[in-house]
Image (tube, rainbow, N blue to C red; front, side, top):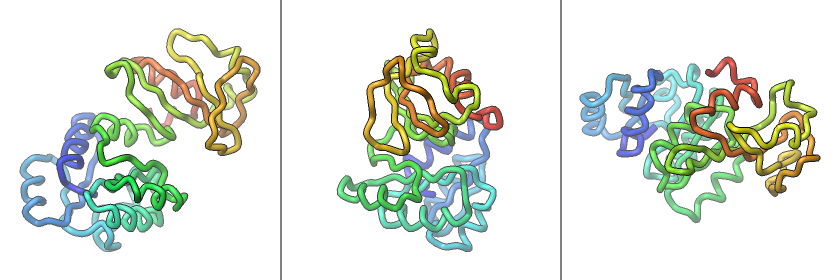
Amino acid sequence: MGGGSLGLHVALDLIEDSQDVTIIEEDENRCKLLATKLDTTVICGSGTDRKTLENAEINEADVFVAATGNDKTNLFASLLAKEYKPRKIIARVNEPQHERVFTETNLIDVVVPESIEVGYLEKLVLRPKIADLFVVDHGHADLLDLYITHNNMIGKKIGELNPNEDYFICGYHEDNDDEISIATPDMVLKENCRISILVKTESMAKVLNMFTKYGEVF
């Protein structure tokens, strides 16, 4: 939702990656422009309207992205979209003072700042099981948070896994605790615990398959 500069460029990248994309945009002139630039469905309407969301087949969506320049619109549309149970909801927040309102809903999976880079947002869309992700080393590596869901990893000590040529586990969160602990060799991975892990970009798919039930996504 949102066909501005950010929405347009994310859509272009996703389409290039062979993803199915639908854009919801309220401004009629902008809709016409998007239709000339994108080989995809453009719905002219408001993402805060149920009929518009249903016309965009929100019930079939893996990810809903609220990327307009209006925080109220992004928040309300995200809460409405949640009723259709997409795997992940990503909301753009334009004013820093509004971020707390977004995060306290516990319904929006990822809240991203107005200054977000297109490449960062594209990766969040394509990796629905990642809690958060940052691009480092000029795109050669990613520092990400993910939840441990693969049975082969549950019960292993971090010392059994570190160091590795493809990744390095550097942080550990337990029981949905926001406070991070520096990873130590004797820490044990538990189901749905969260780790912070530095991964070579070229090894991302391999590592995600190791730690999460990611086969159905990749």
